[in-house]
Amino acid sequence: MLSKKPQYAFRALTTLARHEGNGPLPISKIVKEHPMSVKFLETILLELRKNDILGSKKGKGGGYFLLKPPEEISLAQIIRILDGPIAPLKCVSLNFYERCDDCNEISCGLNKLMAEVRDAKLKVLTNRTLRDLI
Image (tube, rainbow, N blue to C red; front, top):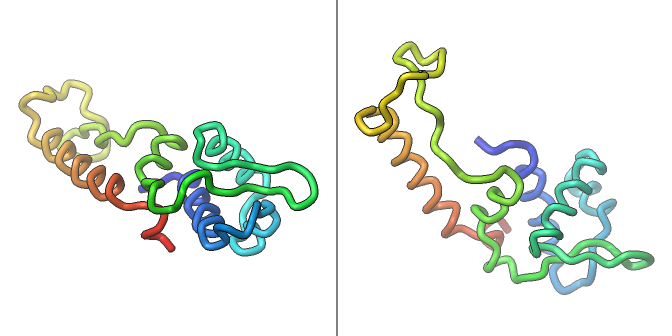
């Protein structure tokens, strides 16, 4: 499950990708296409700018733009920037309502299964790019 940050980022990034080559796109145009909190989106876009996904231009005719072509921006890269490592779910006890604090990660079947889930998810997210979303 994705948190709101990458969900909103993917909406904004697909809008920027569709407008690629037309100069910077103001946040107001992104929010018009995908209604969301301007402040929250600003925070997300600044994080992506700091991590060399986006560039920005201030002033009249300013806004955000992609620094790389959409096919060079992996979905995993965006998720890692905004949410941190793509990790397996924590092991849970057999009643599935509480965390298993005494899990032996080496012999725990559930832990091994969740590692497989993580690896499969990571493979898809690494091989898919922003171009796949547009």
